View 1 (cartoon, rainbow, N blue to C red):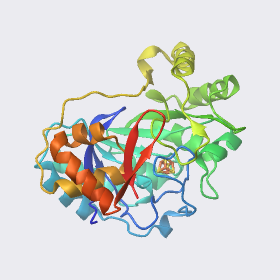
View 2: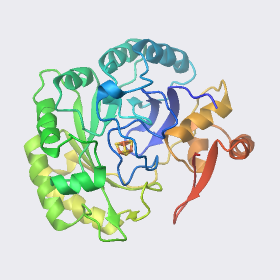
View 3: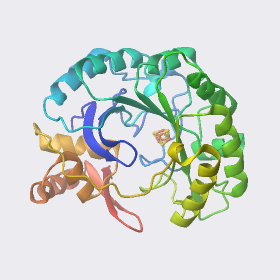
View 4: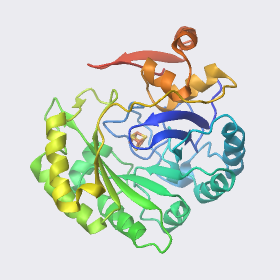
Length: 327
Ligand code: SF4
């Protein structure tokens, strides 16, 4: 199945209706990333990109700009255009040119979702400077917990990430910075990050970074490792209130499951490819696909059946829902 670099829009718990851009072409590995997080919704891979120079299949700025220009004609009800997908976007050294090009052809705000791994590099910070928003992950203030949960490529250290995030806040021209705190629980003896000790240290580190926003969330799709589970809503609320006390309610967002939006008004060119492109980047339920892409359920059902019979996608269930994901 042919895949395109522009996908969605997806209904994001954080960003609303968001059109996605993937800046590394999908290969036989499920993701192009320098982390292999235990909570990753794209599954586990052994291969991690240790250096941006090792990236294969980097998309060019021209491809992104042409893609957005043509896709853009089909949809106007967007909240964000987001660099994300099956890769870590800061691994593409043309990201800065892409952000500028997208802003030249679109009125919608641009967001970069990053795992924070490369923010200590000045060229990466320069690349993201033109975005309206950067959402950067930070799971722990302790090196061992960070390494256990994010499983970064060799050479990526928490200390450098923290320094890099502080440096973003000190840039003269900078995007709004939101730190995403992804909390996990476990069914086994694993260094989870929702304990009082972990939260206390995270608060100290976040005070040093002083971001514009802090988003607290937990796993909402089947994770890479089956011993990882979501943190209970009760515990999330307790943690959010600790953050509120320190940073103030207006800077802290507790992101709970279930974003309800009207169906997209998107016009379709190739519905089957659009459905596949979405599922490849994000496992979705039937209802989520229908609402994200604006496809009614009777039209969607035969498309899903066809993609399953072609073994392009598979069904995957967790305790609450049935998801479709790339096979
Ligand atoms: S969750 Fe994001 S950062 Fe982590 S492995 Fe998956 S794609 Fe990479």
